Length: 543
Ligand SMILES: Nc1ncnc2c1ncn2[C@@H]1O[C@H](COP(=O)(O)OP(=O)(O)O)[C@@H](O)[C@H]1O
Ligand SMILES: [Mg+2]
Image 1 (cartoon, rainbow, N blue to C red):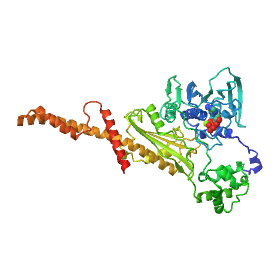
Image 2 (image 1 turned 180 degrees about the vertical axis):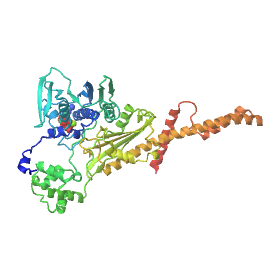
Image 3 (image 1 turned 90 degrees about the vertical axis):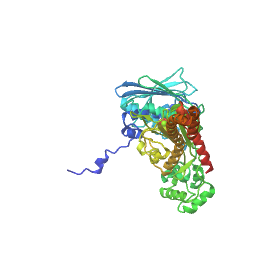
Image 4 (image 1 turned 90 degrees about the horizontal axis):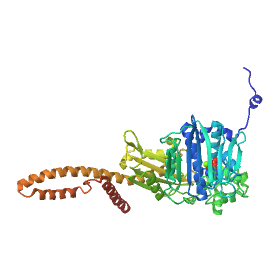
């Protein structure tokens, strides 16, 4: 066969927009698998509503509704009471990929890249050919509604059927129809996603109507909006060469030296001098927009060789111990639980994060199976539940590494829930789907410590329960002997056997103080567990 020359081949050379890219690679946005795709849609709209309410300092009231409209086809409606979207931005917000209000901030938020809502619009369009419908009111001007789709060749919004309305509640309501999806129950379904969102967002009220018309409400458990995270400047130790180039090339500073001071935290004049003495091949006086890859490389190397003040962790906002406790009581209603909030730690030298963990026992903890119970691990990143890709997640590795027997916990058979939330301005996800936290050693270690700490508290409760049941059975057996023995002794000695029996019973009770006499077994167990826990804690603080 004759050779084909380059000119001929390159006649096919074309550029593609990011929208076209995602149209072909929708699995990268979480649209793979029918059930998972539906969860992704709900997740994108719900996290946007929660982010928007948090930013506007509003207690979220969110309605989620899913209706079946055909074979593998559903309509999803999410309505919030947040700030709404001004009409000039609605198209871009819901139909331009890589556009949003969050991308340029270094701040702890659920969304970031500006691909969530527009990804949903694209998914609706490529599976049903229909635009999404938005209704919004910002509190000023007139409420409006419109239909929105993506012009994929240009990654631009197409807004049609725009109409001003006489009235609409404040906030945003989005409605889209999606095909190639399926509504499923179980661990990887929409209901479970919402239940877990309620667990990590006790300040939110979420109402859900499933395709059968069944309504569930996850009531607000805490009447306080979470503390607002601050936008912070990144710490030099958290930067890669590529990050540094990105910052430098958009910098308004005149010199590399002032760019370092302005753009990053903990960089002072003195620090710049110190860096300059290490990175001798970098001209600190030159324009940052001219920073080369080689210079950025030697700067990043210099960052690693000097001493730094630890990064500011006030930008990391955990859910909070008492909020987690309230939420778990509200949703899992356990017999017993222990919540632990660790102090801020740092990974890759410069990115602060906080781990919260809880272990709960009984109530709705764990999972009911045909044989009894099974423990479950509830994973969260910045309060967002992670339902998929558990195998590649740092939380899974950490909990798998723990020797649960040491804590009298059997994850295979007991009604136990293990809750872990990792908060950070920068969560290192292991994929674009943001369903798993990458295997960073520092994060795994910290999760392990948090979970083991939480498990220790529950261990005391469980061993308390085990002790009580052991003592109770011994006590009962001894009491049976006491009856016979007192009668025999009575007839041998001539003493009253009733009196002997009373004495014997007193003696036995003294030996088995935890034994449960009569009903209310669990009650006693609880008290014993707690008493022992307090004693242990006292012991811990002495040690
Ligand atoms: N419910 C909402 N209320 C107010 N603004 C919203 C809402 N949903 C989306 N937005 C706006 O649309 C932008 C794009 O959303 P999205 O594509 O999900 O990206 P991201 O959440 O990563 O910023 C957001 O940054 C926000 O400005
Ligand atoms: Mg989003």
